[in-house]
Structure formats: C-alpha cells, structure tokens
Image (tube, rainbow, N blue to C red; front, top):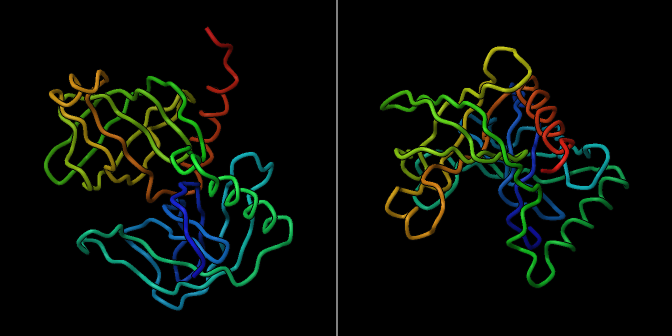
Length: 222
C-alpha cells in the first residue's frame, strides 16, 4: 500500500453483514484504516463513505477488507484495512488534495477537523463503572471529557452524549486515546480528563453529532 498518513475522519461502511459509523486512523491514496472492535471478515466487499475537511459532500468508494486487527493485539489499534477498488474522479481529487496538504512538512500534527469548545454532559460505561462528566471540546472524530478520574489509555467505553437537540442521549463506542491525570494536568497546565475517539455508532448518532457541531461553529464568537 502507498504511504499512509495519520488522519482521523468520519467513515461510514456497509458490507459483510454490518453497517457502521466510525472513524479512520490512517489514510492513503489506496486505502484507509477503519477503527472498530466488531468488523466484517477479511475479503468482505464494502461501500465506504468518507467525510473530508473542506469538501462539500462526503466521498463514496467501493473497497475490500485486506487485513483485520483484532482487539488486544499488542501495540496495534483494532480495526481493518480497506483497499479502495473504485472511487469517482471528484472524490479521488479531494482525497489526493487532503493527502498532499497533510504530507507537507509541518502539517502531520494538524487535525483534519478542528476541535470546538463545548460543555456537554457525557456519561460513560466501562467494564468497571459508570461515570458522568462534561466535555471540554468536541470534533467530528472525538471528544475530550474533563474528569479527575480518566479511564486508562486504550479502554473502550460506551459514551452517552447529552446533545442540545433535547432528544435522548446519543450513544457511541469510543476508545481512550489520551488520559491525563490530575498530577499530569498540573504539569501541562490544562484540565485532567480523557480524549476519546469515536469508533462505533449508527447513522442517527452521526447526523445528530454533525448538526451539533455545525450549530457550535455557527455561534457568534465571544
């Protein structure tokens, strides 16, 4: 596979008996690594939808799973590699533009989608307990929750987000990709808490989340 870059964007896939809204962790001109803990089998044919920054409409692709990484494999993220077998020309151009932008010196640390300040009530269930806290910021790929008791790195939790649409909490699975204890927070001069990447939800979650973020972005500054 061509050179891959660490890029987190929303990904929807359907195939192999599953339909899921999740996110990527790596992306190239030839394929994408899709995060997930329940995945279709290797060789499954997928319909893929990728939401890229600055592109008016999500891009559509057909692909096939070439490799799966199961949960618990040491030093590896759970999910699968999907090879792009077909993509429309406009989508291909948009993807190439993103890869060129992110491949320039100094660009790899830049997020595909910026974080937006937010204070949303968040509940999460882990194998050990159920906690309630508030978000510090949110993006299309994940959320940072301020809490003095952050879950351990790589824990997978069920998140329940109280979005401002007045409906029942929106549910998604998420993985802890950053865990900052109170002691570390003092050194870093920032809030203690957990950064979580969205790794498994449905179309309703994605629709409600995107609407929430659009509304936050449209709020006047100040």
